[in-house]
Length: 193
Image (tube, rainbow, N blue to C red; front, side):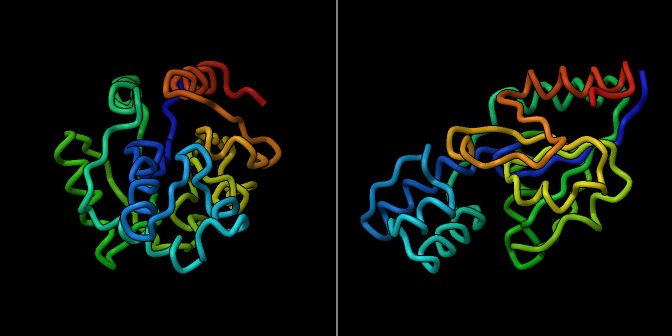
């Protein structure tokens, strides 16, 4: 089995921050929006929220004021990948602007000991992902910029991103078990492309 260099996004790949967004839309703006539809293109495009309201909700989610639960299976399968000899790091759009510290505290609380690179809100992950064999993100736009940079791109799928088009060559996976199995297949067979 090859030892792989794996990158993981933090929000909605390791920690489920998505559940907080509908609660904040209701609390801050009195707007009821289903978690399954809470993606910028839909909520802003449909007029459910203004771009400024959506951005404010995102900043509040990153603030660390609201509890997050692990994505189902994430903690167990990350530990198994480490036991399998893979090298894992987190590459997130959180940064030293105050949004990275809550993620680091969350990781400490859940005993997730991984190196973390925060690139900043809306910034490219390309530089931080160079040299990785695999990257997992729930945002297809982040993966598009990594085509040709990271050989194996995995789109962690949720109901809210089901309509996003995955970049060519990207695998859409719906659970941490399927992520683990896919990575194991790459490590054992040299790839699935």
